[in-house]
Amino acid sequence: MSVFTHLVAELGRLLEPVLAQSATAAAIVLFTVLVRLALHPLSRAAFRGATPAAGCLPILLQLPVFFVMYQAFSSAEVGGKANELLGHRLFAAPLGARWTEALGEGGPFGAQGLVFLGLFGAIAVVAAWSAVRGRRTAASVAAAAAAAAADPKKPAGRVAPKGGAKAGTKAGAGGGVMAEVSAEQQEVMRKLGGVLPLLSFGTLITAAVVPLAAGLYLLTTTAWSVVERAWLQYRKDRAERLTGGGERSSL
Image (tube, rainbow, N blue to C red; front, side):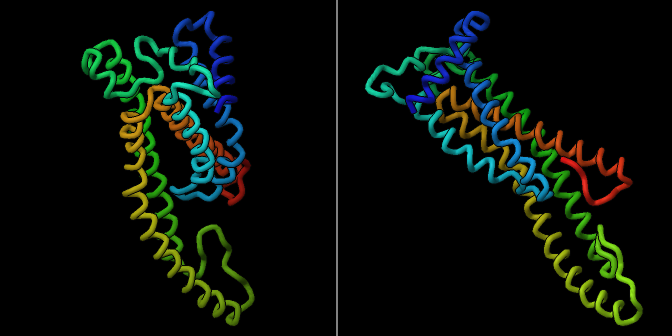
């Protein structure tokens, strides 16, 4: 953890001439961006799965980083020395403060409370955008599964086999299995599409009980995830348009 605190402190010092007392908060945002850039190849690979659950691996890999962030702004000492990060602020709110502590320092509309309200508002906007995109993705996948089930001899993205009645019989048998799988997939996508987007708002609850610094991390990484998936989807759609709707695209 001492390595992390040293890195964030050094980034804060670099930004201090421009951002003054909020330099460490900006350093946390910058640190989060660097983490997400390192995980971008995994995010691209996960996106090719084309399901609402794509991207779980990058999220899991971020958990240790989040826990270190939480500990760094919850511990009074780091490596036997006073934790210098606890003295830094985002505007009027200490980066180690929690929402409950801000309520005791002037209420929700006090100087510290307004900082937290701004954080919660930004997280809510990102969560709403993520929920809308998640529902659209789930609906798109469910529609593709339904199309495959409706045409069992020619699943979506595949060409019907040639070679006469024998080949046609095999295609029909295989198509039946494909239709069954597609129906099951459609039901799973429908359920996931109704639940997964709502999980985006769970970030609000987490941000209300963790230090402000950890809330900043959550906001930055969540916003990155939504923008990243939107960009990857745009590139995929653009590649498919250029190739006439082919299966393969360059991401």
